[in-house]
Image (cartoon, rainbow, N blue to C red; front, side, top):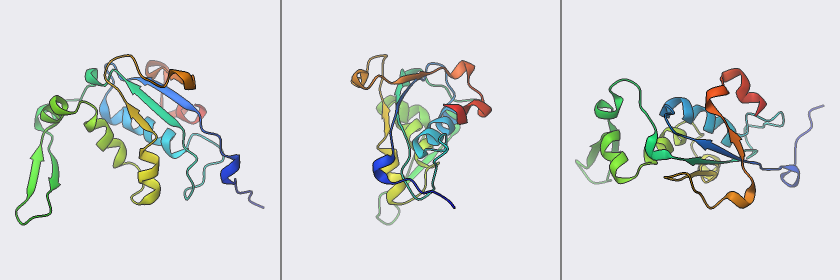
Length: 152
């Protein structure tokens, strides 16, 4: 018989990731798995089992190839002919963490659960953040590979 975890039994941890010289897409996959709770053995797709993730040094994040200048992000204003496009380079100047946030958002489920899980992502420029009281566990991206993500 399958045992389902109740909301009162769910324990959320805090993780801290240094985004210095990290690639956006690879970092986003790690973050999305932690936020969804896929690194826990109690994972259930319809419940929020995820942990909080604090990303620091976002201004030093990298894109592979020429994506920083050539990749396009599209959005629509809602008015006829209102399609807008921007590049990661322009987006990074205005809001440094927005490219990573968009990448993670697109890896989460669409709907109420995905929006709730996205609020567990905290992005900061610089090495200081206001979540030191939660004692986040540091994730070293250099020592991490896809097989070790499930062991976080």
